[in-house]
Image 1: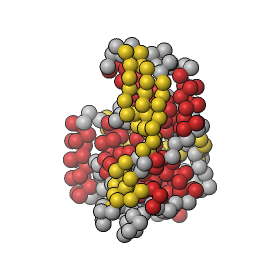
Image 2: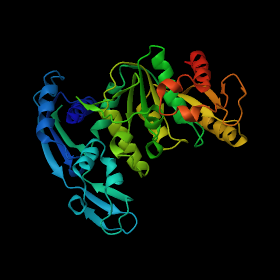
Image 3: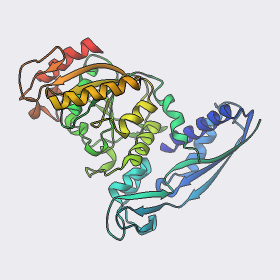
Image 4: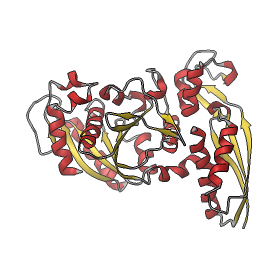
Length: 135
Length: 230
């Protein structure tokens, strides 16, 4: 249930946003799941539902919409762009990347020059794309 | 895009009374041994203590503590495993003994992830083992954990002293509390000041065994200093 901590962060962050923007009600939170972290949507949504039971009523009836973003990398050495499908990883390695996505630099390599020195240019982990609500 | 993770860090630290970042501005001066030993000493004194190794590229607290075949439990985040009475978290759990080659922004992201998902619970002390220098890790810890206090480590060398003076000035400007400065004497077995730790030739052979570590001269010296400054 590592997803629980991230679901908790989404609710806390949305509530912080509502305070800052003086929203009386949050109606929708649009979340993006980066492919690299491989978050389990079902577990994440279960955690959201459980956390909402004791959360501030401003957010309790909000919808949570999830979209996915593919992971994209660019090698800093040979400038090759590559995707997650182009690199190999074991089940254990995928699990470690699930906890800390930066572990990709330990386990993944540029498919062309084999360097671990690459940028993750898209699809890292959990982020909030937008928050809708009423003032 | 909003990064939601930073919003819960304050909550994760809400039940931790004191956060002590063991910092030194040169490499190889004994930060990891001091951070690990301090955690063992505080735990022995009955304090609830956590140890967070944030020296990602040179993580070594797991070697000092002899922490083998353990992994955090997944429960509402991740629960640090117990190592000799210390709640211990390290990137070494996820690296299988391999190198962790991270650039600055990756270090920041990995720190935020660890701080957001680790459930420390109630602690009297969280000891953070910092990498050398004022860099991404130092600036992130100061930015993300408001209650951070710095315990500075140095060695009797004009080079280390010069860097120490510059760094202390910066911490002062950043309004970070300095709980103390410890001089780790890597060459001589005599005390060189009130907060100095003499060279201990038995220390190396005790690494990996917390019970042996606690019986070293190094531990006795550090315990006296810790009693005075914490």
